Length: 319
Image (cartoon, rainbow, N blue to C red):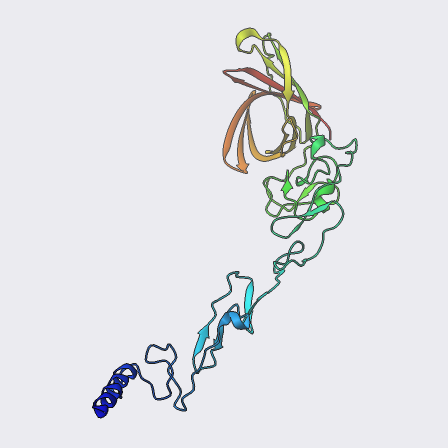
């Protein structure tokens, strides 16, 4: 009877502890097959490290267990991965000023200059007062709005960085010289010189034209009138400054529009017949204009009729 009880206790203990075939059992009594890291042959386990544990932001890193960790890449294009850290790489390529991309500076600009979004120093203008010889819009002088040439004086903007050239039309390689005059070659080169005209509109019969011999020289417009305008309105309005330089059959006309807009240089070939002169433009593009005229040794009067009336411009010979 005592022997039977002992056998029963042994049997129950065997069922609770599991036998040699129990899949949950391990030789060293550790965790079974569900462990993420398999045991080493010597019975020890390896716990891999992490990128965060080393403060790694990028690149690769050994995990300490024979594998390699991928710690990602740098988000910003200016960064470079150095020893698992994203390091900003400053760059001032094609920049004279402004941020180098890493909080540093590529340089500073001079007096009356500012740094553009492209990292270039651009002249802002000092806003000084134009001299009496300045004939363009006064607001264009030393305003940082571009080099305004052929305006009677050298615009301070012309010596400033990043300034676009204005007023030199029809030139092959336009530049603004030390005297504020356009240079650079080209068939259209000419220098405007006359003052702005007052354009009178009158209810009268336009004067007759008598032709004559056109003498070479420089002529500057001194009067402009429109006769018999539609609606019978009498009054005046602004008129462009106009000059013509004549050498034989070559006429160079220079127009400086009211308001200080860029000057327009044109070159014509003239053909006269009686009281009519036909001007064929060769530069900057093809154009033909026909006028009636009266010429003397000191004056040239051009007349042209249109639907808006007859416009008559009187030019006075300067040299």
